[in-house]
Length: 253
Image (tube, rainbow, N blue to C red; front, side, top):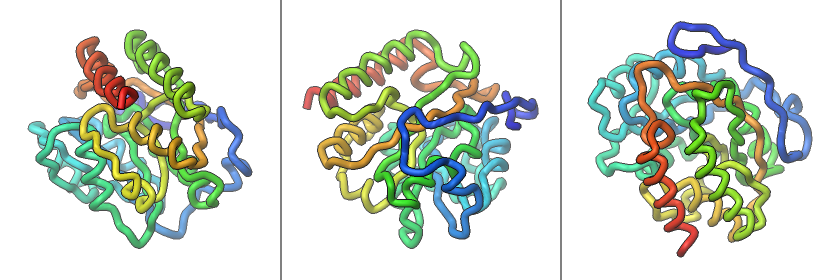
């Protein structure tokens, strides 16, 4: 059970793998005896953070990469026990990269997810499992909307078009260029990704394909973002257009 927005309960459907990873999600376990850092790129997500950070599973610790928030997100994150990294360079890719640099190198597995409450952190052990088991080099979440409000049609169409081009370009069986993933920190940094804007998720997948990484896609429930927060990409046609532009530039390289 999770929350539909801050303070409201919701039921989260159990998601099954869309691509078969070796073993089962149950085999990977829910309890971890080590600490896995979770990078949360953040821009004005204060209303979502208390619920999100309280839902972090045992063994997972939030690293909030604050990308210039003006709503007190950094203070809220610290009050909830997260480590906060201030990122002066604007952009999703800049925030993720700064979070990776700040993540603990001693436990090399790292997760990345949005900080807006659209994902339940309870999904993270299942995504990190194949990385821990060394049956995958990158696990990406394939979003399954729980409501029409979760993922507007214009954003779905743009994502589907780019994902189809990605499959043709790299042969990776990936259907969603989404914002939730797990990998090894050292491997991600070794890819030397350059995009610091919205093209980062696609550049990661392109680079992973070229490096012949084993990429696993798992379905994850995708909920409406927390009330009081605003999407920088899917919430508006303009935001989606900017993201598509950045991602097309990646494919054109």
